[in-house]
Length: 79
Image 1 (cartoon, one colour):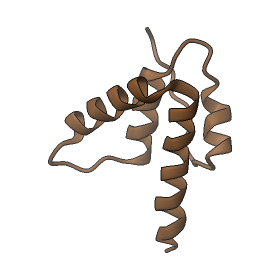
Image 2 (cartoon, one colour):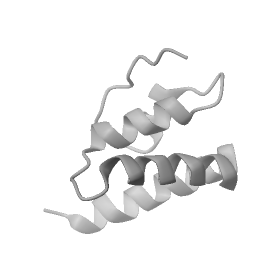
Image 3 (cartoon, rainbow, N blue to C red):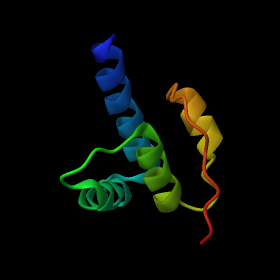
């Protein structure tokens, strides 16, 4: 497996969210995600769901996944 692509790509995706959303929103999202999965294992889908819940109105989730080359479906989120 190419772990460099996974870890570098994930870091780039989060950096992109920080640029687009700002530090405060991304930090809140990551803290909530970490608290939810503490002492467990989180999947790509779990992180995508956390991003979907935290995303601001008008955020194009499917485009984000495509840009970040994340192979997951964007979940439907009720607000």
